[in-house]
Image (cartoon, rainbow, N blue to C red; front, side, top):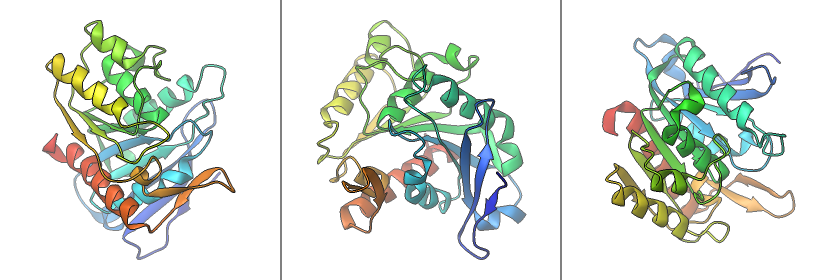
Length: 254
C-alpha cells in the first residue's frame, strides 16, 4: 500500500500505510508539516494501541496532537488475537522505528515507547526486559490506562512481578490513568507507581478526570464497539495532557 500524504498546508503531515515488518502489518506516521524542510531530528514516539486488533486509527487524535508539539509519532496496527498474543508484531514495529525513524525525520536516540491499555503493559515490559528487544531501551516509557499484574504482550511476564524480582526499567516511567476509568481502574496504575517508588525508580503519575477512552482523546461507541474521536471537554483536556508528556519526555524533559 502506498503512503497517503496528509493535506498540504495542514499543521500535521500524515504518512499512512507504511509496512513495518515481515508480518506485513502497517503503521501511520505523524509529524509537523514544517518538518519536511527542517534541520535536526525530532523526538520519536512509538505509540501502541490496546487489545482491539488493528486499531491504529483510534489513536489518530492523540497522535496528531502530539505531532503538532514537534514529535514524530508512529502508530502501528497489531493483533492481540495472533498466536503469540501480538508479540512479534509489536517487536517488529519497534525494530522499524530503530531502523527507519531517521528517514522520517525522527531521532531513534530520543525514542519514547508508549502504549494505551494492553499497549501500556507491552511498552513497560520492553524496558523491564530489554533482552526482548536486543538489549534496547527507550528514552522513557509512557503508559496510559494500563494493567500491570498480567503478562505483558511483549515479554510474557507481568511488569509487577518483574519489578518484584528486581528487574529495573532503567528509564523514567510516566503513568497516566483517568479517574473515571471503569474498564481498568486507576488503582492499577497506582499499584505500579507504588512498586516503582519502593524500588527507587523514576516515575510520574497523573490522573486526569476522564475515562478509559478519554485518556486517548476518544469516546467509546457501543454501536461500532470502537473508540471514536470526540470533542468532549474532559477527553480533549486529557489528550492534551498526554500529548504534552509524550512530546516532552522525548525532547529532553524526562
